[in-house]
Image 1: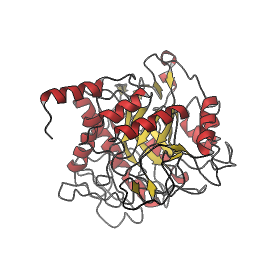
Image 2: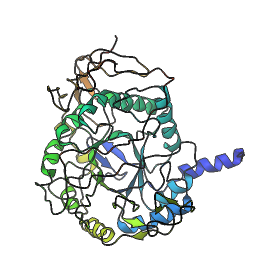
Image 3: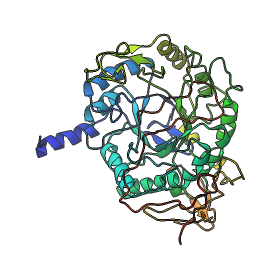
Image 4: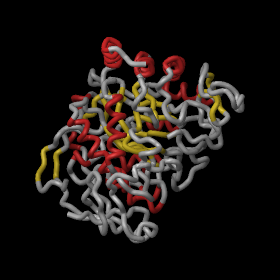
Length: 456
């Protein structure tokens, strides 16, 4: 159906007429318009593989129950940039819920074994941003999710950073609101804290992520602050230059889930440095991480509301006792945080760029030059000087000295505490083979020899 100009105008008014004010980043924290600190109490929300934000009635039902749970944010892994999302975005806005959205699709995911960052990916990411930029309850965007999940995958880090750089530049070129663009990492013990430091090192904020998030399942009952290694995560988060939070958490082994980690995240141990958590996940599926269900498993295969043996639509019914356990935890965890005017950005530090170690998981040696869009590279990554800067805000231009640097539904989650997280988007093959590609040449990839050079 072709929309009239009046219909399009009304649609635009609907998308911008919101009750929530935009969240702002100052230093390493999120803030409400009134200056109070914002902490995420979120859930992962992906009812359908391609887009859960197109069914207004379903979003309205879910938003109502989420509000009862205490949710103030959701994470959506995949959306259709060509669809209309006004109804769902308004439903969540009316419920006081912000939305974090992944920019990639199954076809544009940055894959370590097929590395490139090209025009097809860029245009697809930009289309998602174009579609959602007008909604004030968009909290931010993820440039990727668990792209680095195995020992040989860290070679992808410069491509992730390059994608963040280019999407931030696109945001600024289009004069969009300064919503943050960050990355969601698998919590891999062997990559702590190299990946988070690399994505924020170098001294040029234009090349760094605006936030760093972690998918961590290391707190499995009856763990505690130390046995879960949350104490290590807190140590790495101290004085971090951008907001850091959990983009997935909620181990279900042995179950039922008690969500004791929420006491640490929102309590005295971590609240000064962490900005909250997103629980995996809203809908009950085969992996048994759901907080609600829309009906018993199985069902009529001919029913279009059933996918993978689970109903994807209807009246959400809390999964007991997990739903109420989380509701009780969040009701008692109400940190005040700090006021925006009390943030002292001088206490924040730009981390040093990590160096590679022979045989280790981290293969990027120092502050390397980032690939440009569509660039073909070979050889070794070239190191560049680090810019010294004074941090004022994660999304502002800092004072600099020295030489500036050169210019899905998700896989099953881990079922126990492990030293590394390996879940990733197995189906994220890139279909942009006809574009100019950034290619890693040579046989060193499999052995982590990473000899990729930028042709200057």
